[in-house]
Length: 483
Ligand code: GLC
Image (tube, rainbow, N blue to C red; front, side, top):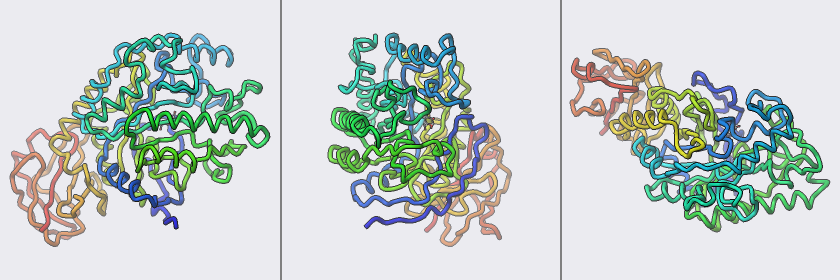
């Protein structure tokens, strides 16, 4: 029997400033289905402890520095606007866009450099776009020639052309968990956007019920591609399926804006895909994003931080810049912004999947490396308050956020800085709900025992001048140990 329970919190508060325009609603499902497979549960628990992962959106679109895939989607939204010299007609644009395949040549591709930077920043898992909605495969698929390893693509002659394999291998070597982002919709496949009709929107452009052979071909194509990823790329931990409009019609939630336009049943047969995938990858976490049920093992709020903890496993995916894809001169979030996002998310029991978009040369913007370095400096001192931690009430109190260690022997209080600078007063009340058994308090990064006494709202700690002036950055973390 499937165990079902309802999310305690279905209301999401947008608590990050300046969320990009393109954040779509990807919020909480009403029902979460706890996986019955013990191997999946174990992997989920392992993944929940990691807290901080790297997301990468990379494809030929990075050559133009435009939004990933969406500029070929014939919907009139802020994020679908066509840019550049070919914008005048839809057909001309799509042709030029797909022709980017013939110039894509990211010769600076060096995944070990990414691994080092991500690892030093404290990231523990990676999710990579093996194929986005535009259908360009960043792996050596046999199902289509629209791929990085096609002779049409200059980079195909590079020994590391199968970039998905190279990325997975490089990160796995350093013990990252490995996640394959895969778009169910494919705007290049003639079985999804049948060239007989013009595409009208993001959805399949014919009725699968009327043309079942066509839809079956698409299902088979999708199954085959996922099977390739599950068999030829070593151990994979997460199958992150995007494009939630490809779903059984019965699961459509008409109250969600982007689901209103779904007309047809686009059942891709998740039971079959998941069974095959898990046969090859036991314990695989499947994230059939926004499709509540058995194949959404964790939920994925996008560009936002839930205001209250969720009762199911979850991960916020958030861009480091303003865009998922590489955009020259993109504005990157500052180190304190990113650290504080991580703290807020972890205090609600979630994971942060932070996106960096590689450029057309195959490297990241130098700003991204700088940010990662700054995060790493903070995490080296404060990591124990993040990894393997759990949420604990009151979760936050004004500018102070909380986590607890898994064994419940320590509670951490994060005092967020105002930007980079953290100013601490000489005495501070920390709202601990439980002071029974409390035996010691200190600031992470220092061995000095702090004076404390219980107060009406928790504990009152005394902070010596030397600690107040110790150049604390981003967030100061107090550790409270219990007997
Ligand atoms: C948004 C974007 C999509 C991107 C995804 C990542 O839904 O539209 O392009 O892949 O976020 O979470």
